[in-house]
Image (cartoon, rainbow, N blue to C red; front, side, top):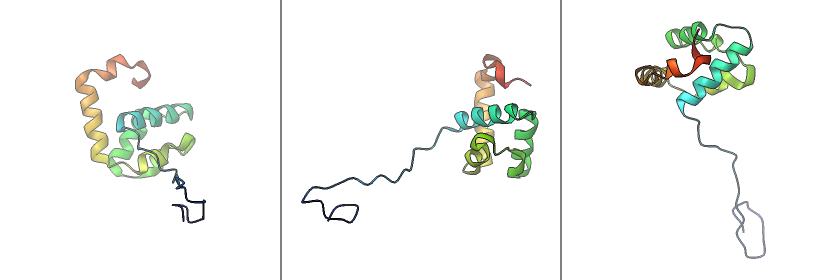
Length: 98
């Protein structure tokens, strides 16, 4: 029997689950920022509301943004934002201003 449970004539077949490696926190936050901006929200205000309250309704469903942040720990987000700020990322990335 193969890994998928059927007979394959002696050879092993691979079964792909579709599980992907998670995106880095910084990349997720850039995607969330862009999605919020596209929907006309103030991304900084909305992300701040989410971080402080944990309420996912601060994040739009547009482009799967809410699903992306759902798997993150808010502490991870704060740590990544602080790392980015201390490296000067906010000045280098014009779309993040505002």
